[in-house]
Image (cartoon, rainbow, N blue to C red; front, side, top):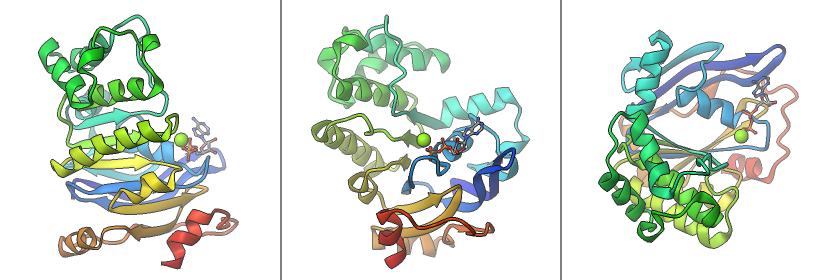
Amino acid sequence: MLLELEHISKIYGDLHAVDDLNLTVPEGQWLSIVGSSGSGKTTLMNIIGCMDTPSKGTVTLDGRVLNDLNAKQLADVRKNEIGLVFQKFHLVPHLTALENVMMAQYYHSVVNADEAREALAQVGLADRAKHLPGELSGGEQQRVCIARALINCPRLILADEPTGNLDEHNEQLVLDILRKQHSQGTTIIVVTHDTAVAQCSEREIMLNHGVLVGERWNDEQARQRYEAQGGLPASTGAHLEGVLADDQTIQRITKQ
Ligand code: ADP
Ligand code: MG
């Protein structure tokens, strides 16, 4: 498995933002994490993306137990293995699209304008390289972020509400980029509120108040591959007390 979460919890005082989650994700899988606001999706993404540490449990990425790594080693994993896409674009306003993409490379210690141009071309923005973020539409800005996430050829793309601020046309463009990455073998984990976006993935898990409340597969072949690899359903040791299925998506998942 590329990613293994064992009994992961993130606890703030009395609040269990993520509550005892077990989840494995093999290389090449496209997984969605769905759930209403405050259900712990971003907290979980931050833990997987080496930007936060769990209060309990272990995370193993590509055979390395992240709990054992120091801050520098975690930063290296993040730079070398993970491409991050956020709902808010986090572009540097006074840098051009090309320079924003090159920034990612800077952190990766190689600054190569040709590779950055190639990444922009991959997301259909070759002709916008010299534009500042303020001169780009929301959809174009999000595609610059995706180009920035793709530049290091990450094995794992983590996208937190990547289409949350986009109209339908731009949502489709972003989904097309994710589909292409997935077809090339990249593992993708997407947090989304959007049923249409979730349905593009092979597998969905649902959180509510930090607790796993459902799992469903959208791709039967992917499920069979996963099970043949010994993959288990996601699970939780947490109790569902007080966790109500208050969302149609949960019904969609649990009806299955
Ligand atoms: P989602 O992304 O699903 O909307 P989050 O992961 O952002 O949910 O948050 C889950 C819960 O954890 C929320 O109740 C949120 O208020 C809480 N939370 C997140 N980060 C912190 C923090 N740094 N300190 C305290 N509570 C937090
Ligand atoms: Mg969030």
